[in-house]
Length: 428
Image 1 (spheres, one colour):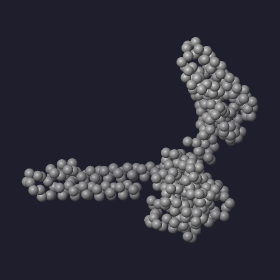
Image 2 (cartoon, rainbow, N blue to C red):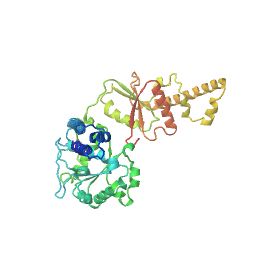
Image 3 (cartoon, rainbow, N blue to C red):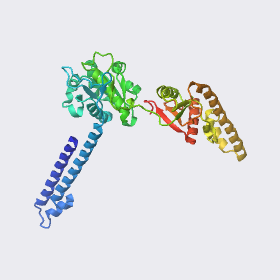
Image 4 (cartoon, rainbow, N blue to C red):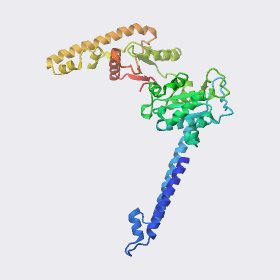
């Protein structure tokens, strides 16, 4: 709301200048008696009177303040639903404490170009989760740029927001150097979204000066920053935990305190309303691990609702016309395939029959392999497959196994089998 007020004051100032300029044009003593001041002012400014300028300024300012008031109201309403963070040990609010030499619990170090909006979100959310926390943010607390090191010294914990260009900023490096020199507790938060200034850890380590690399990356946990509310809450809990661990109350603990937020999705009891049979492809590395976690968490409690199978459903191989399945074996280079398209119709029919036989070969191969592994879990023989688990990472569709998986995904989609997508945090 303060930003809206400042903007409205600027508009008032501009309106006053325009009104004064209009009045000067009207009252100017022109040499020719044929020149009328009001006509000249209207030709130049486009207004027939100064009252029009004042009226326009008032209406525009009212609209600006109304928009900012609506935004502020929306933020307050949505923020009110976020409860306070609590200790898992006693379900009480954690105790906030500051060392005698400190003014702020947390200092947000970031580069403006790619991190300003998100650190502002971090500060606002932390103040809602942990009432009373004092967070240093430059746009709110910076008064003298030449005292950056002093601000760092008077902060109990330093959050480094890793985004594109951070290690090339002079002021960011001043803050980082002061943090390392003063041996301040450090929290690393990584921006992942490339379009928002995201950066990989490998790139961040490459950008970081070699003399600082060990102090930054080899001694601290890296918290991934998420924008989706439920995942963002996990990031915020980790930030709060490390901030508390730097305080005198929790500094002696071997690890940061375990926290929870009432109503968070991780504490909800999730159940299946109807039976679910999940197909897990052996050609999808990592999917079996996720399936095992699902089985441990849910199948043991709801054996009649969740089934996991490693055997491809029959409907995926019934009347399938996907010719790309030949790429499972990668027999034909693109040049040969292009010549094949130019063959005569009789040869094309022979080619189609040949490809059909190739299609059936990997299907039987997969089924044979799956039947051996399906004994690892109850598959619900009388339940049809409802979903296919697809784990996405950088190597998901790589190589021969990736080609097998791509073929299965195409067939699953063609028969209307619902895909359950799970991605790695570093997959983009």
